[in-house]
Length: 374
Ligand code: MG
Image (cartoon, rainbow, N blue to C red; front, side, top):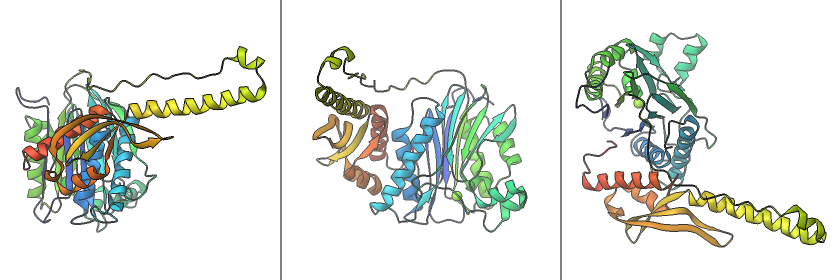
């Protein structure tokens, strides 16, 4: 179903539910990137993990609906959650699910870990795109539990894969071709443990806009008991407009092969020295090219600064260049973000760096109303 005229083709919302005291879910609606994370580990942990995951995803998201690249961004989010716990943010053992989608026209890339889900409504029919990484899903797949039993099983919230513990965590990542008029849903298990797929399908079929859909989905979960935090993101697939996010231009590769004609006439030792220097120069240029395409944000004199490159130096040469000093005071950001900025937040290029700056600015300008929640 296409959006009502004037309504945005995407919407997201999160609700604490009726039982929990805090909301550990986090989401982002930053077209063409959409994601839902459901934090694990309890108060002062789950919400930290889900926030770090979403922010890192945002800073590393690819410009196109490329499943491999989106998978790499989810792995970067995993590394950031692990690093966050080592830095003393949240609690050790904290974790989070992460289900992310990049939408480029009708092409959708999905990367997923945990039991938050992605669904697609196509021609009125709902299909679950992701397979839960959970104990009950394994049992359903093995045929020892029915779908209905899994919904009330005492271990239904035990997940078998999450961000925050295994540095070699596997990510499910894939691409699919949707059709104009399709509707994409990302949601936490606070929706799917409360509301059956048939009811979700009916709401997605009949809601006049993505915004109406997220409101009705959350209401349905609360009507059914609201046992958990509920997060929903709905995106209407519109057409074939390509994504045109700016990307840094990679530095030119420089070839450093030693010309064969000349080396053959030189003494062997000289030739070998030249070959060795070429290898070192090649490695240096590869590192330099890599650094040129990277970026990071860091606290500098109390405000957020953006650097191209990577922190530190390589063979005594620093590979970072100050790009911009913002007027965003680090102390006005939430404590988790501020702590990470003091160490430096690495991202995959200047474009994601500046989109992260925009979210920081929103956080300081409207602390109660931003593109991410809660
Ligand atoms: Mg949950």
